[in-house]
Image 1: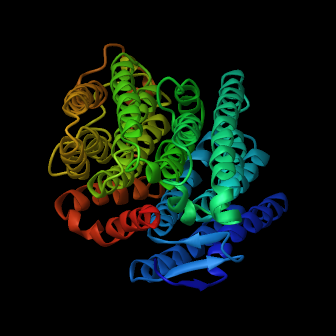
Image 2 (image 1 turned 180 degrees about the vertical axis):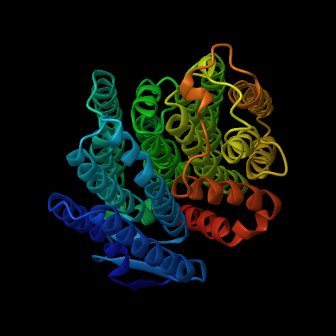
Length: 502
């Protein structure tokens, strides 16, 4: 394993946005024009620069630690941190005009805007804490902290539906994550007699994978998988996800689908994946869970009339691909799972922000009440179509490369039934997304409303994030080798932990 360098920078990624949340709130309370928006953007921009610097160093062979060994940044943490800080920055750029528009319509009070930016910064800090902690118990605490920050964003509008969605999110995720805590306690208790307190550290878990009794290992893994699958929204633990995605502001929906559900996959990679090479039953169990989830998720998406709920159920399906790859415990499976996680983050954020643009222009998100927007909103139409083809796994977009990698990984393990379900799900995804794109942008509306007739492209500040994400979707699809150093480093970080127990 690479020698670690003590540094304050990983801790900075956690503390700076949390302190920034307080600063943003104070500036907002003083009602200085645009102060909170500018302060939030600058804080996130600094965060992003620090994250890029850390990533460059880590992908070059370094590893940062802080607070002893409790905070650690290896290839996987660097990849996740870069993903978190990049997407939050892009989402905040769109949030400025989106929320200001809702404030003008009387949907959001001025004080709620201040709360929003503070919660986004708090969310960023808890996300960075989750992906940099090297401690089993702290992983659970950090994930629960992100749950609380996210729930407040889900319930942002304080309507009956949004409050119910926020409550359901907290209730189900907290209960689910309690199972993961049981699993963590089991693994630590079984590993303590062998390596002592080192059993608490994530980068030491590979040492206990083969030392603890098989029945304890499998029970602990089962508990952790239930908790992390709940956080990720896999079937049958997905009940919170459609409501949370549909009731939150569209920029928050992009964070939910692009980042929050990834935390479940990240935690699985840090823990369960390490046991997969030792116990083949784990591979089969996760493959069954992922196959059921991806198929049910996309079938539910096919029958939705609400664009945001359709994308939410699509997220259930797509994160299942990630779980399937990570659960294999092989280089190709982990590489493909992380690759698809990254691509899903980009593409699903692109789609949710595009839906946000549609709602901004028309005030509507029901497919049956939209139509003919392609000539009025050509940029949004192009972005949505790119995202639809990418999430369906068609070349030359990024989703094709990651799905193909996953297909190879599943086939390599001779799980041909899982491979067949994955391919079938991809076909259903294409049908679902192309149908929605056609009905919203090309089919003429049956009952055109004044809002629909007067729709036009959103302001520059809103579509700049959409354009960046669309270009990334195309660029990664055409030049996938651009990501190889990052993905290889992240994959090796996982395999190096497993090799400790060999």
